[in-house]
Length: 190
Image (tube, rainbow, N blue to C red):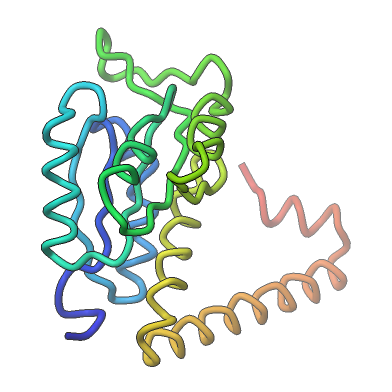
């Protein structure tokens, strides 16, 4: 088995509105050629499905689960309590107003409620938390976990890091050449 033949990462979220944020984790995994399985699993509305999903993830041999949730953000902690698979929690600030499904609202606490719910898990049920709405970081963290097992993936990750390094140097040279005001106006045109 290799890291690109079958899903090794599960991406779950509490509702379809979370996909607005969670798709970034999938994008990162896709860039590295890592297969993933994506599902909606609500800790509150489908508790038996959550338990079944944990068993499914273990049977399928997932190495990492990325779980996104907003508000009270119970999904990451609840899935972690049902499996030994490492869980990366993504606190989500934006949620869908079910009464007006086209309109997105922001958490009353700016995502801090979700961040604290995920990061303050009790001893014995750890969940790694990334920053609010930082699903891409969750994807990268999953890549790092998998890279410890797959040398080819580790090499891809090193190349990715080198590209980021070169991009920063290139942008710094451009800023130095143009000056901060011109660089910012060029970079962030409206």
